[in-house]
Image (cartoon, rainbow, N blue to C red; front, side):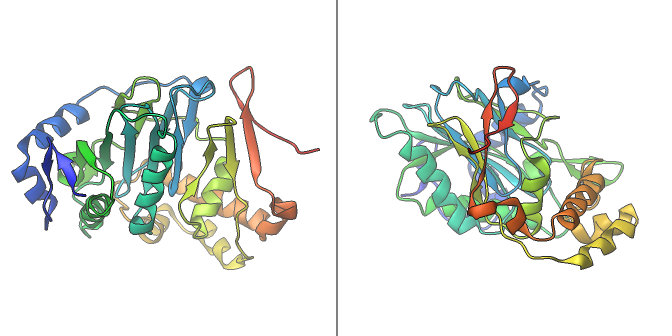
Length: 307
């Protein structure tokens, strides 16, 4: 079935400009969305989604009230929600495998919505900007096309992507919105930025850095964050990057060197140091078992140690 916009099926489009020309209200919605002030989030009820991850839950979840992700430049942040059940999924997509990722997101929400016959699937997109290589534009088109291919009817509500998420600062194009959150209880989607990126931030970054595919990191039925098992092999060559200057790291390790947040280079170095300290992933996952984390009474994520 097609992707619907104001109950009109979306035909195939060749550019995001064509999309916004055909549906001017999407431009208005995007302008409103990007002008909203950043919303602060209590880390005690928050679940952070890193690049190439997604998480899904329902309003009945007692451990997670907000799912969010940030640091998206050319990447796109995707929220899919069923209005009847309230089941919602947030993903951080980088274009590595969009066509196989989108069905995972749809399944994550529909599998949590079986009890609800009423309602519809609504889609919210944010991210990308007018980057020189058109990486954002290509990803925008691929995500829209992938959702169009799904058998479920999906209604596009928010589309703050690429040129509608672009601002020029000092002659350089940048995204306006780098991060978003979704309130699991209400379905509100909002711009935000997040200081707490755990649990297991370095391990998760290492998984993505070494080519890990899109991963579902949350078991909402048990309130558990699940990481791995991950797979990588020793690669001492990456130590080379630790001696390079910031501009070199940005040039070669980013899709958008001029638009990255200020902590990008340090984040890359920390991830590389983690991989050098754990050259083989097998030692981190004895018996091939994932790392599990539960929410403590204090609101922190704590590793569950199997007996």
